[in-house]
Image (cartoon, rainbow, N blue to C red):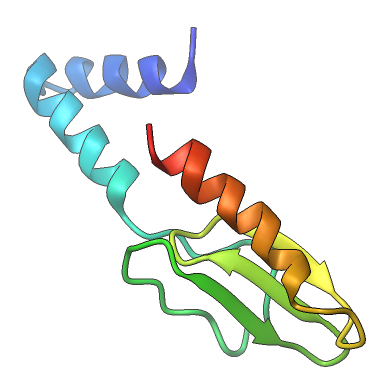
Length: 98
């Protein structure tokens, strides 16, 4: 059983009809996610949906993620930013375009 099925079952036990539970879960899937483990916690990213490539400069590293919240990695400033492009393109072309 998947986590999605567990959540749907829990919503239905709490009184949601199947259609309402599915709608609620789909809405949650579409909400932007703040990347975890990346960036400075004192300056959290604001994600408002979409799939733009986001790059943030930290103290000694560059953080990359998709605007939807998918982490794409960490680089030293001496490395080319192009290294974020491949993972982002794969994410957008394969994971998002379902």
